Length: 68
Image (cartoon, rainbow, N blue to C red; front, side, top):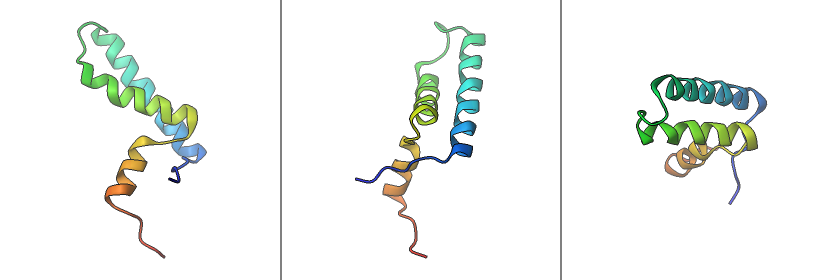
């Protein structure tokens, strides 16, 4: 299976989005915030660090890109 490797601009965006989510969780309180908020925060951080984007992989499986 071929992974979607995110370009640098998308990795920077995902890192920023992850930072905002983590700041929101911290501001709310780690013990008070719902566990569901941790899923996108961890996925975005993983995608920014590795370049492998789980969301893009799932989307490409459901909606394959058109051959141009």
